[in-house]
Amino acid sequence: MNNEIIGAQSGGRGVDIVWEHNRITNFGYGAGIFSGHDGVGFGTHNWTITGNSISGGQPARDANGFYPKGIEVYAPRTKIIGKHLFQ
Figure 1 (cartoon, rainbow, N blue to C red):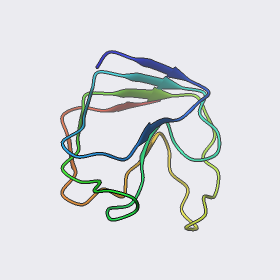
Figure 2 (figure 1 turned 120 degrees about the vertical axis):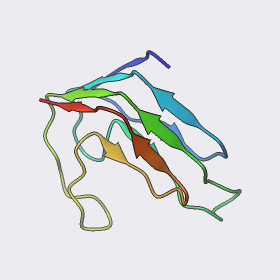
Figure 3 (figure 1 turned 90 degrees about the vertical axis):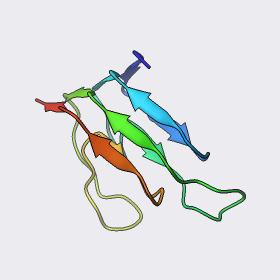
Figure 4 (figure 1 turned 60 degrees about the vertical axis):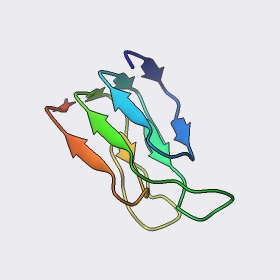
């Protein structure tokens, strides 16, 4: 909550993770907030992502062929809610 992610990624694997009011800037390959897949090592699901600010950065093609811009989450039952400011 209330983190600043500059030119980097933050995330991983886990259950019941909440990301609130973070500022993500100047991301490159991948995304600012990211998750692993459910069932790889241990469970990754039930994430909540709300009210983040995302700016700067350049989307780049990831290993799945997607071009994420600030959030790349593969956790089942994830809720992305509230206002997210994309600049």
